[in-house]
Image (cartoon, rainbow, N blue to C red):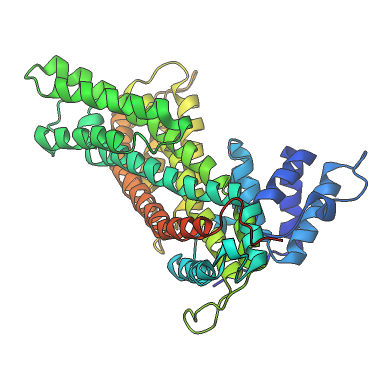
Length: 454
């Protein structure tokens, strides 16, 4: 079911937030990426000189809303300024459903593939004899070959990145008993050979995708390969010091490389030339099979697919950003120092803000962060205040222990939710892979110098 329409008041609030961080060039970039037909020449005021950004933003949002593409446009807006955390909170506060996909990708992909497969046999049927079943489509394929090449290559890159990313995510989640020990004497639940197998899988993933990874991730891949190999060697010894060193290496690897790989995937998906693919589907329309009853055109299916894909990507990226703050909370609780409470408040506020978007509060009102929130409040109340008698009850040290225990209960719950989102995104992109083969077959049917073109 499509999300409810925005009220005029919501659009005004969204416009205000966008105007605070956007400049004119940002609109051109976003309009070039979203799946609609808007361009700066048509969706921005004719005379931009001296115009306030709020006026420009309101005019653009009005045109996008009239076109009916406000949701995918806003997805592109928030991903374009993803590094601005306060801006993310402001947009998601008005449009939480941007990261809540209510649609399956399979029907949309089936429609698009069916259209491409129907188009493939009729383009460039006999170029040498200047015979072609669909010259406009041939011309479009030839003229937009770089964009089609980019889509095919990006899907291959994404699959490779996801394989490496998944291996690290498994290490983070399933190896948590080892990686999160950090000077404790608690015996891990999983035996050492299981951890060694997980580490070996990281090294194997790096080897398997080495020649398919984009250049932007080559340094990250090398670090994964080198660290996995070195850690495997150290874990194979009987020396506890070598084990500790290996665990420290793996802990640092997970913390550093998961966000880097996530950023590479984020950029790849953001820059996919969806508009060019839409143009191809519209240039040479072919009958689409009925999907769940009504017939869905391939171009419409691409729009729905784009929205669904963006929702999954934004949800995963927000969980990744949340995990960075959760790790910072863990570090502060393990080694409280000067400014501890101030720093803890900053990091935990970011976690809670993100969880409000990511996690639905159960009907009973007990969310995954409730116990830790309460423990933090009790710790603060236990702290002595100058000129006041010491608070009764447990000491600050005892309350700190309660807070650490609550955090240790919270963290695996958050990780399991993140893992579920990660698996959903993996499923989405796995379902995209047949699209790569269909596009590859289509472009091979149209030679670069096809004589059938006028």
